[in-house]
Image 1 (cartoon, rainbow, N blue to C red):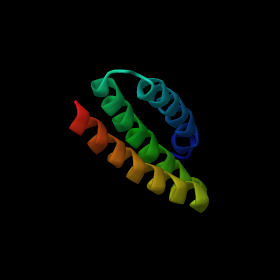
Image 2 (tube, rainbow, N blue to C red):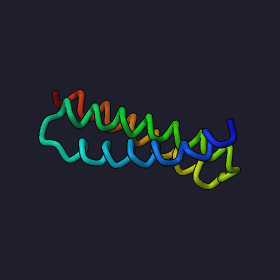
Image 3 (tube, rainbow, N blue to C red):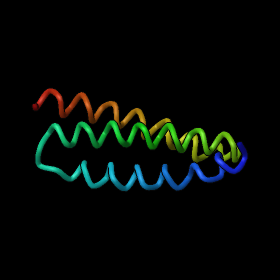
Image 4 (cartoon, rainbow, N blue to C red):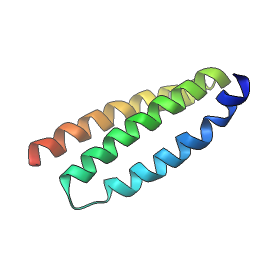
Length: 79
């Protein structure tokens, strides 16, 4: 289990990059999906952060998750 938690940072990074790519779309639906991917990456980073006791990273991810939820609502109201 320890090795799996150590490895988790890599999928979290890949999902974060994919989400950033989607957020740049001109289509609201793709942007919303990007925000959902960012939320997935936030969860992955939080899990990794708890494992690594990276409390500042966890705090950052919680704050970013709140902004991603806001982004979903802002984009769905435009769609």
